[in-house]
Length: 349
Image 1 (cartoon, rainbow, N blue to C red):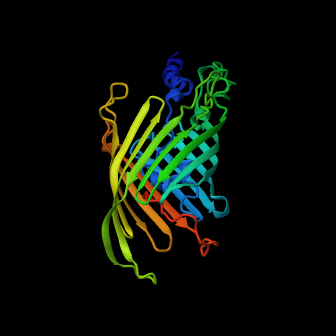
Image 2 (cartoon, helix red, strand yellow; image 1 turned 90 degrees about the vertical axis):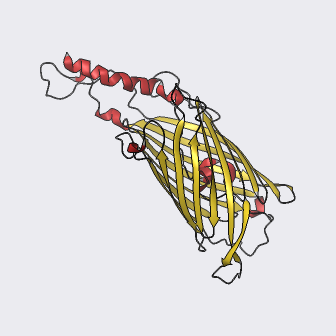
Image 3 (cartoon, rainbow, N blue to C red; image 1 turned 180 degrees about the horizontal axis):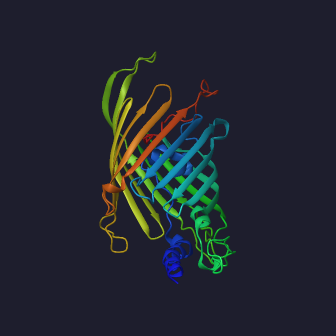
């Protein structure tokens, strides 16, 4: 009797999670959101006009047993003859003590339009396959699996939560747009616009559409010393105030801060949260993010950031550690005259 009671205490939260909790599920997030450009907005696909390969890793709340770990990798390139960018993205995410595992594979496409002098617009599209399963479910033992005549013998088949151990497969469609000039950019994206059903049991639990608006402005701060290469150009210095607003289901979040670029060094500081809009009567404060990164002459970008948790979890949660790396590859059409005379001004971290 006691064993059955304890099992019920354990299973009730699990049933609530897999049955209804995903109604308010959130996608993984990166603090270095511009270092994960294809994940932020499909319109960034091919935006560097060169082949690019990159990877991101995030470990959130390592001080807790319910930590979140996310890894993603991407490749994109630009097809100059077609004014198009194409790319591919894969992501692996493990959430919390229940070990909710999500794998994503996505194909992306964008098209670049010139809409004025030094002004461009890029619409983008993404189609993604998502597979989700609960790894922790395999370790559960239900009361009706225990043979009362042989409690320590083999387990009996269970009829509880039929189908809950089976993974779910989703098709997600996403769209985005990006407008930019020499010093300004504005991006809008909508992920999971078809809101696929992600329920692990009979019923419907839609994956909410995730909206994002991201913008910023580049402020020149003069130039530094000469670069140590054959270009004889001076090193760039500028400040990049940025904003990234996200909404998915009942959850809203705002990242606001700035990057300081002193070639090749990049420093970032921003705040995440919406303290004036509480969630379930809890203060909507998340973290203060610190970032350091380098853009090397070889085309390599490397960044590290730390989220200092300011929510009720506190810094004892371990905050979040994030690493990003990207490479611009040699372009076989490098000698060809480009149709665009404007560089995308947003940061790489």
